[in-house]
Image (cartoon, rainbow, N blue to C red; front, side, top):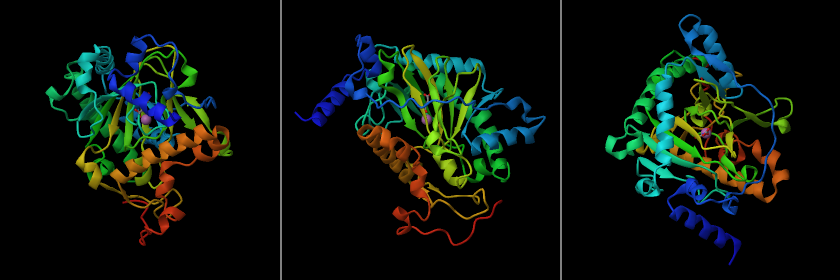
Length: 392
Ligand code: OGA
Ligand code: NI
């Protein structure tokens, strides 16, 4: 049988257990199965992702906005403390995700699905059948608002409450500051662009891994969101790709270490496009770990379901140099489709010719595909003829 057929059978068998990576670990695997093998990429560097204290917003707003702006324009990641989401709600959310994942397979199996029409989905690897290598992680995905009966009991009360707090207390504050950082009025991204309207919650469970160097918890990716708020427990493993401005070949992964009480914020692809490239949606990943489980909870700010197919995104400000639109407008759905295509292509190149491909491919971002004047698109789409104003 051809290797590809073997692989497909192995993927189907794994998916058919509905028990995820947790099921493998419970069954006592001591070696990482080959469907999970990734090409190693050990490029590592030290870089401190800024920690921004939001308690200073009321007294020294301009300084905090300046910090948010600087982070959004460079590394695309920052941590926030004193953000208004109570620590009790954070720890309850982490415990709920852990409890769900540690329930018996029979209790979780009814939620295991690849049907994107379902608003609550438990699965191991959203892209299991399209990605060249699987990741050492299981996920409970919940689109909000969810009816209580749709949610597994472990998350029923906790998840909507947590998502609501992140949305109302932190999301609104962040969007206000990000609007100002773009030179727009405070309420612009929330009210005119409706960036706060949709939120979905992904509860990730990364079991301890017997051979962590062979696989990854989450492959390098950028987020298809306006922005993401991530809660991680104390285990660690999140890394962000930091570019060296002088020498792009020196890009390397830097740790985003857990900080007590902090939430991690990162700019997503939608906001990079809307900000005309001023804000950066940067790749990040999670390394596998012999220590575990690691639990994290991502709140993705993006419209869900039908809204995403029709929603059009376009640059709303001039680029940082006062120029016109760098990106063509696109629907959310198209952006998401391209996202998975680029991710798959990149990973395939990496596994075929890792060293040669690494520097070439790694630096091609998804949004490059939406850049105006690139040969792939300029035949189909043309740049808006009206130059965009710097401010609205
Ligand atoms: C994500 C993500 C990181 C983590 O869900 O998009 O990047 O730490 N998660 O789980
Ligand atoms: Ni992410």
